[in-house]
Image 1: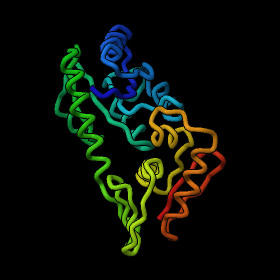
Image 2: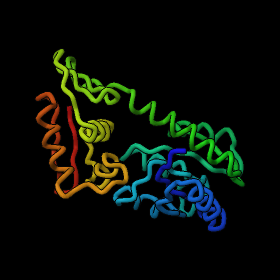
Image 3: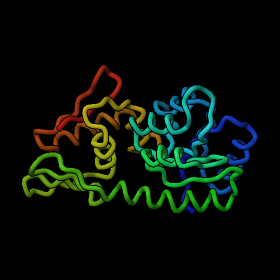
Length: 225
């Protein structure tokens, strides 16, 4: 079974640690447990950016788990599985906007949890790496093949160049912090000093002139095309 970096957003301590135990016993990495929107969003700009969030609907504060999911998805690519003691029609309609990979009714059963993660994450990565992006009328980025096609010329990208471009391109004209880019590109590995800067430099040389990657406020990069 593949392992994933998982954030648990749950304001009840006993269920949260029960889920954490199940996940860790099965090889997953629990990056943390949060009980509110504020504490959850701290992981956006840390070295512990999750690939998956187990999101309880009812958490501390004025906003529920769906609003937290929207805040995450506005800044990075992450999979969501919702946890709830009940799921009414209003909840399901709102939750669909965030395109979750699954729903689990509390109390969570170990087999259901693990199978939902395994199947959902496999589909999640298939969906996100097969999508092609049009950068202009004559330029296309294919992340699955790790290539750029610019005016019928095929340009090969490295694995890290492709992952970095995939993250940038999903949020055009928006600042993406260094930590977010490093986590989504090196996926839990520790990149060497200057690796992000070097990869950006190489990527800029391969992109069409109409695609710009800017370094903003010494805090992150944004792409425009």
